[in-house]
Length: 77
Ligand SMILES: [Zn+2]
Image (cartoon, rainbow, N blue to C red; front, top):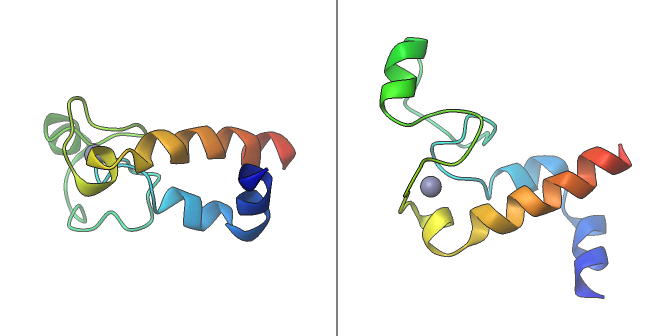
């Protein structure tokens, strides 16, 4: 059960770093400071992955995995 082992090691913060670069939950999202909500939305930012995104995390499938892991983390408190 590799999944449960990873869950014990990875913190919620670390999982969120694997989210889409346009996902505002990702603590690594940079360069958005000072942008209005409207500008963020126009550029595809939000509390979700950007549609048809090709950032590194989306491209390599990390986004999908991180989303899945977050479900377990938030359920487990
Ligand atoms: Zn992405």
